[in-house]
Image (cartoon, rainbow, N blue to C red):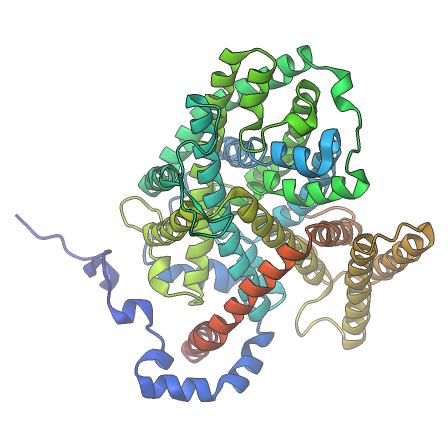
Length: 574
């Protein structure tokens, strides 16, 4: 048998490899001596990398070479619409609605979804401009690296991975809950209780692990195949959504809407911050930009169009649920299937459960695609070992990155309960979306070596006013201060900062697709995301702070030195 002649030096290497050089090829990690030298230079290296900005060319061209093989450009606007639908619908509406209606919002959960939907749509606009201009797999990580620097991008990257892991684990647990509710009216029926473990981590879920392994295995087999399976399953999910809305309203009782605000207005906003999870799948579409045939046309259609419709659908589904069943009688783990059983439609319980499982399965499939591509770009930048950036030559998918996310999310899903996962996920998501809005303003108003210093100072002052007033509004709300004077003052400060920025000349005009009404829409996105972050509560803040502290320690010990070596190596070779 004749041997194939290698076309390049990279094709001679097997895809499956596991040497020290594949994980840590940078100069700082060649020996213990070189690592000690690198650690001793932490301060100057941190100064060098703190505000170092990447470029579109670097993210699109230079870093993609680390993957050795290209991802396949196989997606159209049609694929993106269905990927968006499959990712978003099922990633929260079947999971969080019952929990938040029961515990925080009551029938006003419909308003929580409307508020979160508006905030998500503003974030969609920001994502769309970046994805159309910089069609790369890294999504928000790459956008932040280009606009606000290496360090902030790393903090975002760590939260992106946290979001990916918590989101996948949460869906795995929810899939298990719905499947168990089909067998017995006990969503924990298939879980193993271990009394020696603390609450929230004492219900072991082996089925969630199996579901994650299967979904990620399909995602690794090929992007187009996963897209086709998602399309077929999403048609079924669409049918059950129509069923839930129509039959929900047929069996609705207006008396179930009283009281409409059982936990007050604060409960509505607290629920809005958590149900934001239901909208988080849209950023997965932005991550598929590198595999899209015409990103400048297809991504705006896929993101803006699908999210507008999904917001309306969510509000109708939430209203149908709370009109079918009294809010304090809703099952927090499998809300819709148990709701139909409670109104006497036992057969519908099984239909809803099966279709809810399909919706969550498509969310897992699309999530697997997007999460792996996040991880790939982070690995391309050497913030994690570059072996996770490798793209398989046959499937055209990042197999190593998928395996990494799958393994960790499966472990988390095995131990962690849904309420623990949802608060972590929502904080990370809102934080990233807020940073993307900030990055968009930086993109429009600041160009390195072009923007005059006085204009930059004015822009920074306006940006600080916007962020500061947004934090102020959130702090007022959490202090239980309800006086209109305080909110009016905070609102006027936010308005003055945004108005001042509007009078500054824009330094960059989008070449492909641009967010309208800049700086007003990004500024509104900042204040809404900050407000929702502040509604999550102290525990979510503490979890976020602890996770971010761990990320910073990793960055100072590993990520900083790896990215420093790569950046200066690229400068020498340029």
